[in-house]
Length: 420
Image 1 (tube, rainbow, N blue to C red):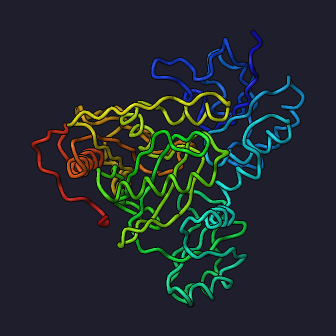
Image 2: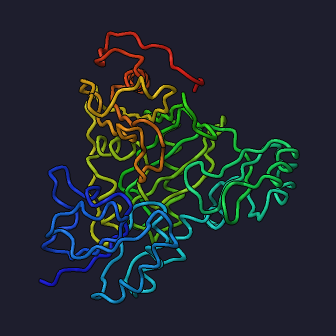
Image 3: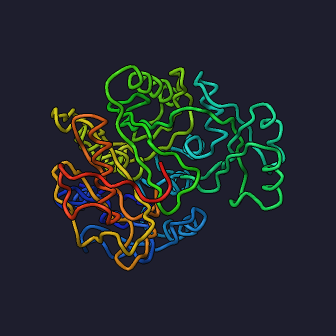
């Protein structure tokens, strides 16, 4: 049987695409893989797993496309795949240039360009903030005058990079002088005063086959020493049903999409959901282990399968009564010298996964996007309250302010640094 030739654009290294038993997602008996990755990640595969490696600066979209002549000079490509945010548009550009099936550039851009994204959603009847594209801060003045508080963000940005919350004309004038801190066009949008939430889904033809609604406990415009970023799954009830219904409404505007989505939503005090943005990739931090714990599905694998045109994994609820709720955190310590190291691991059966984001020498891996913090931890428990309390214990342990073991009877010290 002829093996399919898959072009995989990557910035994590090939070890990120493996089953728990170490087998690669892309079976070497079925696929010839050309891996485009960072030079320092070029040797993580075994000899029989990857057909060819092309090194490129995959941290920058424009640099990735420079590999196109080399790819064209090789054997014909059957599929192109990418799982990380900044490589989705290059993957679509490769598909069009190479004439292979999959999500095209126009549709992929709806997941990356925030103005086009919101315009698409608004046309489909989805509630969005009032928004407009801008080339400079001064152009946002009418929107600020109307709403009193606005957000400025790069149209193609991710995380909180280059994002500004503006509450006065003086702040706009200051940004006009100092610059916005990110190249390219910006979007200005009405500030929504609501609870920030996210819904993570496996999607088949615009319909979620599994979806998990969560709410952020912290939403800071910037992340500094002493901060944390936490999220907990929303328990059964009206808020959860509202979020899941809104997720279905959003995805229905994209009946051509199959794969994985990460939807950001604001839930107003009235209970009305408002669209923030949507990504065609798995969420960061603890989203992947939380979803796998709940549904038995690896979102990274599901995202890859969707781009290969293959059947998506079948989800199945796995919710024992004492482990049904999940949550995660990323910690940004004030005193790194006092923190635990990867050589230590807490003993707690409710700790689903602990991922170190900072190496023992204090450097941060270049692939980390969500948080240049110390570590990301995912926990489970019987309810949101228990999960939140366990996140506090893990943070105290990570930052060296808690006991050496995660003893469930030990008191949780007060958080250091700024309050959440």
